[in-house]
Amino acid sequence: MTVTLTSEQIVVDRIKVVDGREPDEEVVRQLMISIPVVGVLQPIVLCRPSPGLGIQLGFGRNRLEALRRLKQRATLARVVNGDTDEIRAWLRASHHR
Image 1: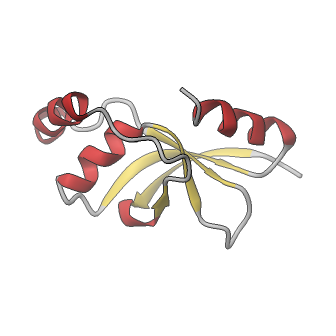
Image 2: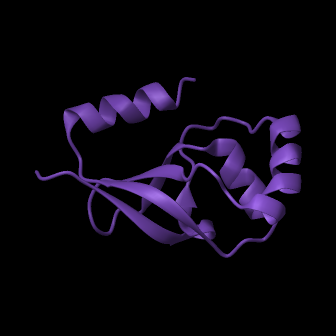
């Protein structure tokens, strides 16, 4: 399978958080103050294993939570498109941080 990396505007409510990690409330609070002023400086990273399976969060749990609380409709994100053993290992590792 071919794996591609794209930058896309993604609807925030469509991003699945599958790891069960809780956001860091202090970090989210700080992001909610800075995002309206300077925007999201480092895009969240998502994974789309294949068309139709949805988009999963890879990195950026606190940024995503801040965007949701700020009621942002969409955000620019880096999206890994594809499904390989390496990507599955990367997602598992990102979910245990």
